[in-house]
Image 1 (cartoon, rainbow, N blue to C red):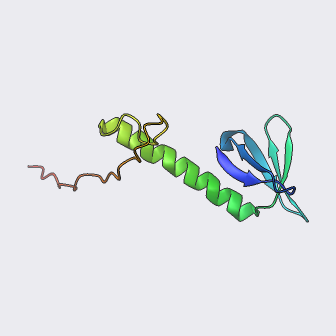
Image 2 (image 1 turned 90 degrees about the horizontal axis):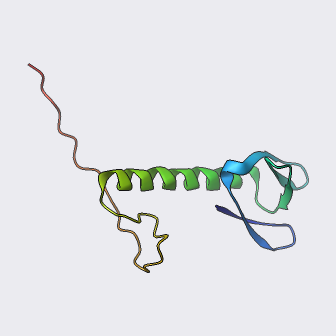
Length: 97
């Protein structure tokens, strides 16, 4: 979920997978796949940046899960312990005969 701010100042969260389009005019409007419209304070570029960061976090979490390094890489289990930073192993070139 990405955090957005409605024009009224109310905070809301939307699932970026359900965002159909974002329109700019005097106000920025997010339209979801079910037809709901949200008038928000953020610009289109800010919405796109939040979606990209959200999806990058998902990809990084999948990488960590695949390696078996952390059973809860996004810290959603409520353990209170922040997820550790993970870096890939160094790349070792393979020499073929």
